[in-house]
Length: 237
Image (cartoon, rainbow, N blue to C red; front, side, top):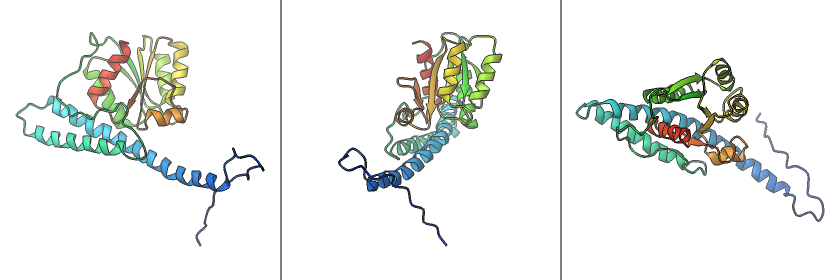
């Protein structure tokens, strides 16, 4: 037997009070919230996967010789990833915000003034995305402290004797999210700069209270070049 679940429409509006929603309006809002949340979760996971596909194909294009036969194959993968990124931006009423949709050119962006000049604390619960971000930053001279979640990042910060110039963190993580992590870090490292990333847009995160207003933000999927350029810009702001 199938159980038909119905949402509680809530209390009826008081007589003469036109500000309270009607039971039908409450039920309609609850019904639309389910597909919105589902679509948002799918887009979030899809954007994490696209970060890997676009990121590693860009690294291949940057490292393969112009006459290498594999370069054409890597270019096809990258173009397909970019098209998928554009499709992702159209799903579940979500604008492109900070993502990189330009094909890879193989050039290296302007980076830190000297290798090893800055230390980045990287907090990312998606293993593949974390490894890609670390690779991109280390290839351009940054020292990276790698953490799988907010609590591990706090422990690494406590154990690190030197300065930490930037926290690069996913906004939403198990155990401890990026905002809570940042709140703890600024108490002991007052000069640390913060860059949030997420498969959700900054509009969605801000509406849910998961992103401070005006915070540095990089939308997934991002490319290695875009990540390094954003980190460089924040550190030199």
